[in-house]
Amino acid sequence: MFTISRVSLILLITLSCNLSFASDTRPPAADAQGEVSKGGSINAGNPFAGPTSEAKKLYKRYKKASDKTITAIACVRDPKCIEPEDEVLRYSKEALRILQKLDELSAAGDIQASYYRGLIAFQRGIYYDSQAELITHPDFILTATVYRRYAKQQFLLAEKFLAIPAKEKNPYACQYMGNIYSSRILGEPRKDKATNYYYTAAIEFISQGNKIDGAKMYNAMKENANPADSRIVDVYAKLHNEEPIASWRKLPSDLVQKSGSKKTQQH
Image (cartoon, rainbow, N blue to C red):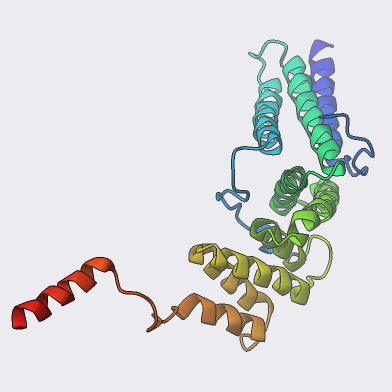
């Protein structure tokens, strides 16, 4: 009897966590109370200049709570664990509270909150889609379908939130928007739209002196558009053409002094 109830509780907790994580497609709260492809890599760069914002702190807290939830769920399957179900509920509730806070900040106009809320949804969408890809046995096709539905819900959320910083030409947000539109999670890839976002990201990265990520966007553009596309040609030119030295620029003072001393010695 104990074994049956324990197994039932494990299934209930795991399912409730997945449902709670995947069902937050409701719009952000109207009032703020103070508070690649589908396998696209997550860029480790800092998408915003300046000190760490509240939104980024919330993002880091969410990642910790989410990781601890996964660990606790794995522990539920281990008979040596003591009351792991409480850990699952505690950390999953913490993760949901953070998501709600980011929703509130985004609704209040916080662009960074929109970015990190969209990034979380993007990462979760990638996770659910990868889990669906692992399921090949015909007896578990329904489970794969559920995972794909979760992935689509998360990508729709990511599209909604990331569109806000992407409108401000944030290159990282534009990169993720390109990944969303080049994937098949939301249906047929919208390659021209993806190329537009990759192009904006590339131009912004290059203007910041970040040619490495600019080159990554160039490669992403080539996968979605004709190599002769004017946007691809433009990015290629910006990546490979160095600005010529203008003749009217003043020489360094030390060179001027050396030149003057040589003329004195000749006289």
